Amino acid sequence: MRNRFLFPAVRPRSFWLILPAVIATGLAVGDEPTAPPDAAQISGWIDQLAAEQFAQREAATRSLAAAGPAAIEPLRQAICRGDLEVSSRAVEILREMLAGEDADLAATAERALEDLAEGADAAVAGMAEATLDFHTLGLAEAARARLEALGAVITEGFLPSGQRGMHVLFNASWTGKSDDLRLLARLRNVAQVGVHGVRLDEASLAVLGRLRSVEQLQLYGTGAGDAALAALAEKLPDTKIDVRKGGKLGVAGQSVIGPCLITHVQEGSAAADAGIQIGDIVLHIDGQPVANFESLTDLVGRRGPGDTLELDIERGGGNRGDEPQRFKRTVKLGGWE
Image 1 (tube, rainbow, N blue to C red):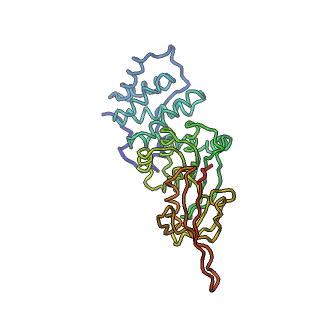
Image 2: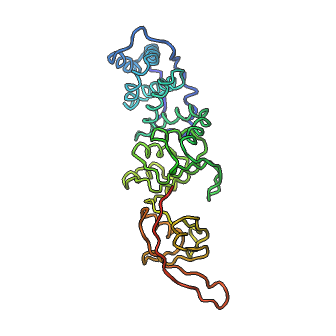
Image 3: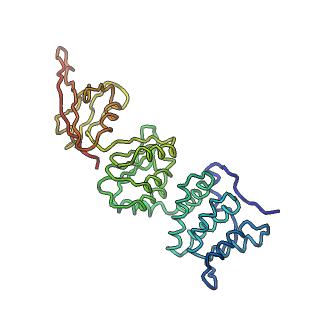
């Protein structure tokens, strides 16, 4: 009978986090084969991972671990076959490569695991993500330093829910690429991620889809399409995703309580340029009623930088006997930075 020390199809995340530490396969990543293996040899070793004999499975595991980069893509494909013993051994081989001293091999193995973690198969994604989580526990500090060097703004603070955590902002100062965004997954306790005015491609959105513990995700002027955003929302059902096309008014207010009272006007913003002041109440935007600040945010968020809006404003009337003034302001929206 085969010795199956494998995972069931579904396990809680806490279970996945300890797996890489407890699976024992007897790998010898440092062992070098006498000659570079060819595709047929690698394919044979992968088939042998499902052999009836434990010794054969162990021998194949060691051979694949020693095969180096040539084995990574075949291993990635094998993980998706549906045989849980093959999958678990293949993931463990990639983990050993990831933890080895060969930096290039480790980077290639990490990329393969990240691709698996971003895939549609929940069981495979869970194994890959658990392996990456275990590996990255000690890499968070270096990841933060690298992200900040590339222009990310990282702070600590509270969200409206009361959750305290890390806030990561990518704006006009960001000089990194899609691959650099993968460092986000190495950070610990990220509560909010903002992407303001940075274009997001498919690879970048896949990375964001792995941030399942993030409470808020702000996507302002990213150029992401509706279908891609819908797929992201499906991956992050517990995350509040705020999507805006990129137009920025530059005001703050109480999000739910009406009316739409302006409590802050950002210096140099489109609102400031139009003469909007703290204490003003926005009644309409382009003729549409504005019930509260959340409604204003929604209406502005549908417009892009450079678009013009006509705001109906009410000002004053706080003193006894004073009549509030009502007037219009035309605002040319700025962009998020």
